[in-house]
Length: 252
Image (cartoon, rainbow, N blue to C red; front, side, top):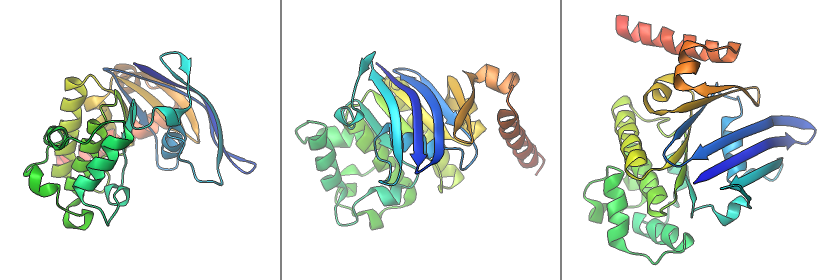
């Protein structure tokens, strides 16, 4: 399955926030969208899901397997997401089971607890029957992030957008989440758009990289090309920052 985002523009009044963005997500492949904070990565993801605030307007041609589509028709069915702030993604008045019921019904499925529990185990959750009785405030950030991944998986979508999936998590939990995401993408042949500013994550998981700066894609290529032959100053700056941090950690 292939999802193409072609010529995306996002405007706030007369101000252009994102310009001429084109990306392709394909089953079995991980595309990393990287850039510094404020480069336009999250706005691009929100536009892809048609979830921009009312004060923003966008234009885009979105195609699924070469057919023009309205993204709302595939959201939660062929395309799912995990976002960067798991605490804000859950209804505080609903248990995890209630979230699972809503997710499965929204994707056109009959609720089956065994199916949800299988997805939870794939996402790295334990004691799943008890977890289903919990409310968001009763769970850690790492558990909520795993549950968000489980809900994305239970939709059976072939394509997944992961927007900074390890932000605000400690290093051990980050590693666990990335391990699971890597294993699941291979097991289920997912197409993944991985949004991050961390080149360590890119090196570990991505097949291809698109670099954003000031609302534009400034460079695209394979991981090897981006790491060993970067051409744009924004790419070089991100790589230098990553390598400098790596040196500090190695020498620390």
